[in-house]
Every structure is written in C-alpha cells, then in structure tokens.
Image (cartoon, rainbow over all chains, first blue to last red):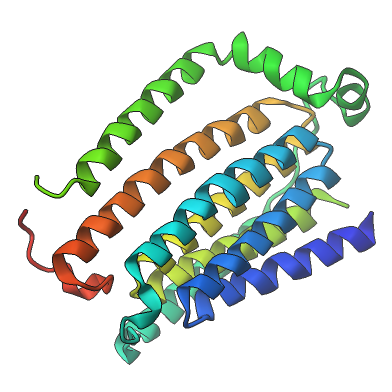
Length: 167
Length: 99
C-alpha cells in the first residue's frame, strides 16, 4: 500500500508540474489526464472505488474530451506563443511561497480530532461504498442533488448562449 | 498511510494549480490549472472523510464534480466566444469590457 501511495504521489505531482510548464496545450491536457488517473488511484487506496470510477469517467472522460475538442477546434498550436512576462512571474512566485507556507503551517501545527462517524473502512467494504453513497445522496442530500440538476441545466443554456454566433 | 501524507500531496497539487493560474496567460491552460485545484480539494475531502469515518465528504466530492462539469461547459464556451472575437486565447487581450 505504501509503495503504491508513493508511486501515485510522484506521478500526480510530476504530471501537475508538467501541466503548468508545457508550451503546447495538448501536451498539458494529456498530462492532466495522467494526473486525474493518479488521483483516482488515491481514491482506490482510500477505499472509495465508486469515486475513483467517477473520477475516471467524469474528469478523465467527459471534461478532458471537451478540453481536447476545444483545443483542436481553436487550432491553438498554430497561434504564436503567449509569453509570460517577468513582472507577473515575480508576483506569482511570491504568492506561491506564501500559499505553500500557509498550507505547510496548517498541516504541521494542526492537531487531528478523533474519528466521529460510524462508517469505518471495514463497514464500508462490508456494505459496499456505492450503496452507502447512493443512500446518502437520495436521503440526507436530496435537496443539493436536485439543485445540482438545475445547475447542469443552467450550464447547458449558458454554454449554448456563449457559443452562439450573435449575442 | 496517515492522513497527513494525503493532505501534503493535496496541498502540493493545489499550490501547483494556483501557480499555474498565476503564471500562464493561455485561457485553456488556466482552465486546466483550475481543474488541478478542484482535484486537490477533492483529494483532501476524501482523505479527511475517510479518516473521520464519515461519508459526507465523499458526497461533497460528487457535488464538486457536478460543479466542475458545469464550469467546464461554461469556461470552454467563453473560450470559443473569445477566440471568435479576438483570434487568440491570450487573456491580456481581454481588455475591452464590452459585448
């Protein structure tokens, strides 16, 4: 398990770095798919196989297909290179250092509270994580579930309006 | 593995995503860095909810995925409209503030 964790974390961090440094957007997109697969591996290690499947289907499948389609539609590799200026890089490095220090301090200084729930890994594996997620989704979280459907409808209409020729 | 290891990986990926948003000017790559940040937050949620023996974090991850899908549709629609208007996806060219 530990070896798998290190393999996944190395793949995830390396591909995340490649996403933001590659010149060609298509290369970035393919590295992002690799990063999504590594994170799906983390979900399997955390005993959430349903979320791992959702990660691969929704992120690596649907969203990245959309991104690659738009990259090819816009023919981005023919466009001249967009340069990052030095001023922007300077501010970005400062903000990156501050953000990283904040997260590191939070993880180092924070103390863990005791587990409060009843759904231990053994219980989740006994019932099956898909069944537990379904039960929660359709009982306790039924209202956010319905709101999510309205949100998706709004997104469809919004995407249609944006991609239309005339406003 | 302890929960701290997962949180450290999630924090590192989140920082890389934020850095990518700040240094790049290509709209598509900024969007992909945003997706990286979403995924780091999801990983943190799943790790903490697994540690606390709760399911609520995992349900929240599903809603984050829904929002990410909606956001992808909208953001790529904006990218297509912007490209049609300007002939590029450099965000420095988005400086007119009009329809």
